Image (cartoon, rainbow, N blue to C red; front, side, top):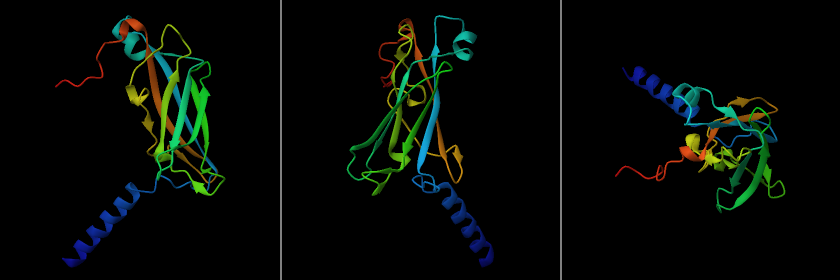
Length: 170
């Protein structure tokens, strides 16, 4: 009976260790890459077009802002402009402050800064695109690169902007 308990406890410890792996581990890479897309959803279209046919927004600007985990100050701020497919790719070095400090991606936020389409420029907060999405788990890891997927982030047309949609239903 004691053997079973010890085995169960060991299994739980292993699962917890795997689940709580250090998010700041650079896996030997010198930088990490954040990729994602920015799309336009138009609520004035029929439901299928609105829900399933979002169009890429070329020329949108997405920012990755990383804070020092001790002081809370911005240590890295990088931006990228989306391509014709609405895709952005931001490379962020792990080393900052002259190389003496290592950056933890868990202290970085990804958010939309500017839409490339003036007609579709009201940011939604889907996937926290407006307020900022935290980088929690890498989507790609190798000895030379670490990648994080962000978004997709959405903008919409002004007619779809609902006043007070961020307020709670209290």
